Length: 116
Image 1: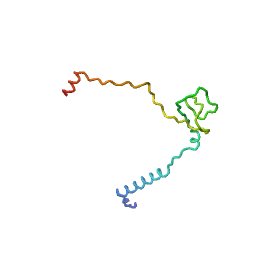
Image 2: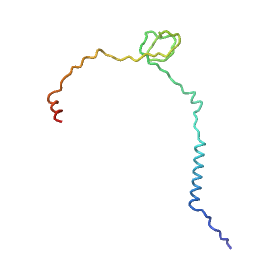
Image 3: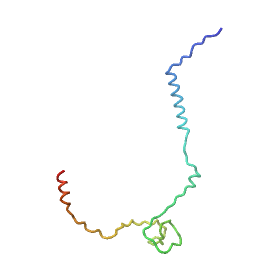
Image 4: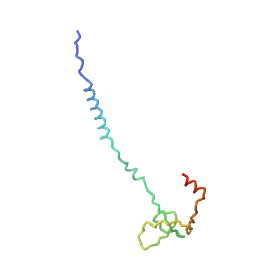
């Protein structure tokens, strides 16, 4: 004869609790287990290029170059140490600004403005 077994008593609250436990455990493993770190070798391969934009240029090239720039600048100044060139930007004035003459608007335009 066959033995009759009772069905397991598992309701929806038990299934929800077990599912939440598995979900929280899986998320904890992913969040706490995954780390990001830059490779040491990649950090060594990265190099930067420092370019200085100078305002004044000289005719002769310098013997020893301290900075890369768009034009030759053979030093100057009061210091023996190599310092980064820093000059204020010049304003590109073409010439004197002409006086602006005040002109009255045409009468037709004045009438349209007054009518609106």
